[in-house]
Length: 433
Ligand SMILES: Cc1cc2nc3c(=O)[nH]c(=O)nc-3n(C[C@H](O)[C@H](O)[C@H](O)COP(=O)(O)O)c2cc1C
Image (cartoon, rainbow, N blue to C red; front, side):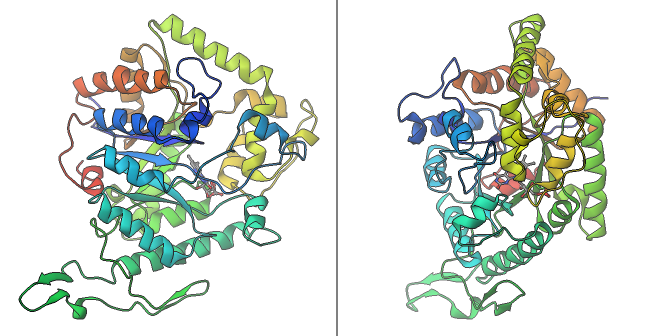
């Protein structure tokens, strides 16, 4: 039996140019990384390949979690510098017509009213093509950038996030869909009877409302999140339209999907009402042998420079892994940062050297020609049950083309991904199948 059609997204970590700055084949030069052009190329290529969405990652600090210094991160442009993703959204929307655009915002540091208004504005401007990736934000340094001495506790952040999203949705709904009447004869632009206060008084947030702009074009812009801890999954099950999951095996994908669908049903939701997309980084080649050689080189780099993996993980968990011996078995570790991510990381081996060598941020067992990788993706989906992939990786124009011009046309020929958008709105396309 063939796999059912599935969805595609792109997870843009760091900025396009920064992430590719020292790569061969199209890394960024000079101030390219600050310019919209590379990102517009990316968005157009994804739209040509009929992707559902482009998710723009974000974080709010310069890490200094490895060796107690910013040097390791800044020298390699790891996680900083990073421009605010929000100003890119209208530029990308202007350059495309159907692609969904999903900026990341922090529920711990953004005021809900401002966020509701910002996303509503972008959704109106783009005629219904915006989503929002809600993160609770990790990093003591992020908290300190907002005047806190220490970060709020992990589970408390999720309680805030629940309330944040509740309030944002109510603000979006504070204008009825037909509130704008533009009745020239009566001299009425908005029917005031269709605009309502929300009078929200929660534990963390309060807002009177209504929003001072109209209801978003989609009614509810697409809600996305990526936390993998039990609290993160519970948060997703209440409101999210899509979840992205960074796991490296089919067994983990199945576990996640089964668990999420149970949680959705327990919330009284249709399990099909939340699209679960898996982070994937394929390695392509002219031949399967060439692709395997590329993949082997990537693995050799990983083994030669474990510090890069450890520094990245340190910035997500506030743990300085430079203080541990690489070859001594690790004890228990806990974090107030990304708990789901740390748990997966520690499960990869006994010592830090083993862990760093084995750790994958997403699914990487997609190595070969475009034909081979497309086939492997279909097999994964058939086994897991749905709903698709979000590609990620150090981004160059070459890597982008390998996927959008190499793999995707084959998936399209096999009827596994869409060949045209059926709807104007991002939400309608995401739920079209
Ligand atoms: C694939 C993926 C992408 C994420 N993107 C971001 C991001 O852009 N910014 C951010 O602050 N956190 C990001 N996160 C973190 C989560 O959204 C979440 O806040 C964090 O993992 C803590 O949740 P947990 O303890 O439930 O795993 C990402 C996590 C994953 C797995």
